[in-house]
Length: 115
Length: 415
Image 1 (cartoon, rainbow over the protein chains, first blue to last red):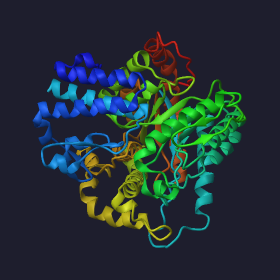
Image 2 (image 1 turned 30 degrees about the horizontal axis):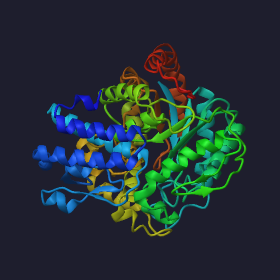
Image 3 (image 1 turned 90 degrees about the horizontal axis):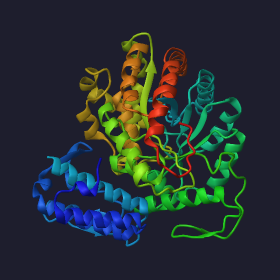
Image 4 (image 1 turned 180 degrees about the horizontal axis):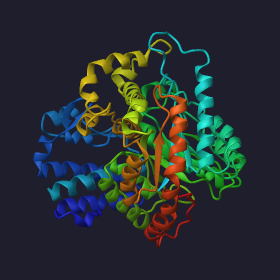
């Protein structure tokens, strides 16, 4: 079971709860911005995440590139430079997109927390 | 656990010819009709068929609504699933989707399962001018409105971001009320959870181990109970998984009959969904099967040790990034439902124990033979299906009812 209340870090929990509230209110863009904010803060608090890789099409890429590319996209060059940024290609997001980002951030934070 | 069949209508080109035999497309369409009719007579629960466009050899199923209409007249009980309809308006106007789903529901006496999705191949997105970064938002807007069209008399009209139309009565209305069960394609964990929140069945949600499946099933149903924000007017809670399928008297013979099918399935899928290859596909000229055979020789050594299948690491290394394609790729490469009756009984029981609702078999793929597929359907239908059906009623249904306790939104589900 994955809930925002499971997040031990107060700051991260607050950001994810903000994303959850926006998502539940149907405010897609607000929720996606909150998710991006939470994820970048999570990475800043746990820089070891940046060193983790996943296999993709025969090569290893940064774990950060798993961040969903649904219009708020991780900029690969900033990941390579060690200072990840998320670029907003648009300012309107559907609820399903917000749900995708929210679930991703929640799972990533809890997985890291669990070790 | 219930069972279904899944169709892409694959048609590899002969490796030594520029084009197919003139009869080839007629042949695979009619073979599918025979296979599904047999499955229906044996008690299979579902057939799901994709919608794809321009993906030569990989999928010749561009008009699944017609195949479903034909099946509706040749079958009695099997549920007719769109797995999935492409709902971004660039592919299909939402009103046309609502009309076709409803008409099929009437023709089939209420047997339609409405799966929806977006696709991600450059051949399709580029062919219809669908913008990649907006496709999920398009899917959501269109799918939500399609359910409104099927339930509103008249449909009051809509001014949306991706389509608009004036007030019209979109007819006919579906037989199933308020509308057929809704499914969405999903493979990543987060997408399965999106499906839960939207009240949709999660279709082909990946090929996790049974243990991973168990965790996901519990979380999926928790979200249905606690965080539901339905996209439609009734929810369809359920988890379905795809798996390659072939049976024979020995595991070795099942592998022999199967091996090239799944391997070509995943190769052609990777070909079309990798922008580097699919984006440069030469329509009408390329021979994907010949390329596959050439590559297969290069990798034959490693795969041969595992009967033509890949290890988990090898699967992960080569898989596409798109949701649905990743799910299909894993299915094709895992080979979990290939073998004898005893092998399948043992393997499938593990998924059943973890409360999987529906297992969907990919039987028709690559250059597999029709008679082998028919034999497998018959063997499964006679030797395994009855016991799983019985346990679905006595074990899975009560478990699922328990999971859905407290959900006060209407449910329309055939699970």
